Image 1 (tube, rainbow, N blue to C red):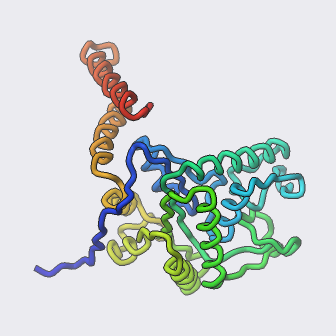
Image 2: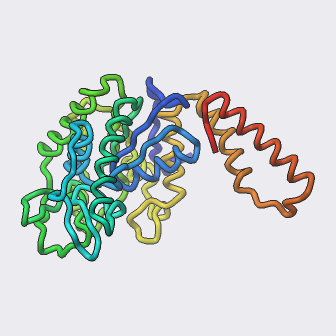
Image 3: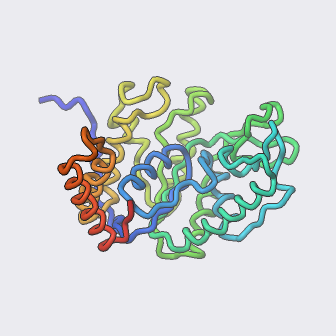
Length: 310
């Protein structure tokens, strides 16, 4: 029988994730996708503290600022459209009050250093090699905050520049946590607003740079492009993977990175999550009260074993 797919086979990693692991995830929107899955299954996770960051220099700056205990001041924020913004962070952190923004940014940096120091696994997802440089300051930004594009120069990071970013990230993390597992992955999201050829070149630069580091690589991009390889696995925008694709990549992630005992616990948690989402026909019935008591017993058991709370 002819096989019409080229399925990517992955092996279980040596240092897998269990319910004692502490996981930090930083990077593109694909980071959020995987992080949401880990959250659903009640793993100890920290996801994109500065919001979504697409390009490696922005991720490098965030990690170094955290580890080096940088403090943001008035000079690091701008006022636009009645809100204060920081070029290093996502617009979701922007605030109408400047002091609130600064206090939040600095609190996040402090907490992120704590999370990096105790992390067993750090996953970094790169999305694009294209960056925007604010003409006024000459600085590369993580987010343009809908400021007029004419105030920025668009540039493509070279493979060498990205490699420098990634090695800087690795060295900074290892300076405070030598034992952690650093895993890079390449976002399967297609940045077609940059152009078809430009997106391919961007991804190629990222992939080439990743392979010149000593970090582990999880092939999310290859699973999407070479295994699934069909528009039916995209959302209507033909850019983002749809839920079927995300679930498939997640299954590959489980196979590679989640320990076998943890997978068994995930099954228990999934049943509880479904139970919590259940809407009874009769909330006052004895049958429903029995169901709730059984559900509570299961939750109490997981809290006793792993400290998991719902």
